[in-house]
Image (tube, rainbow, N blue to C red; front, side, top):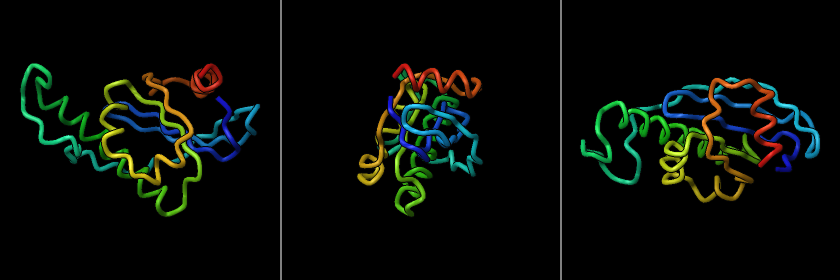
Length: 134
């Protein structure tokens, strides 16, 4: 995946968000960790209210879904404020699905790629390799 300089990479799962910025160029990705800020994980996704069922068995899953929605809200806000000009989202498959439900049109316009992999807690080098392979 070609990542223009200053592209923001959001790496998330249902509990944690890490943000990185590409300080290299499109051909030579060099990620730098950034502060991730506060995420409001109390949101219920726009997909509707969740209730316990076999598809959504417990409150911890609802918390993870809410966190994914909160991450998207924060990214939407940064895009609308002009703080993010290009974005890549790397997220656990279920979290990515929850996040997609809340993408603002402006976020979709700056989104240059998605990777459905859980890379939270991985090294910057692992994330760079996943981006290069995508």
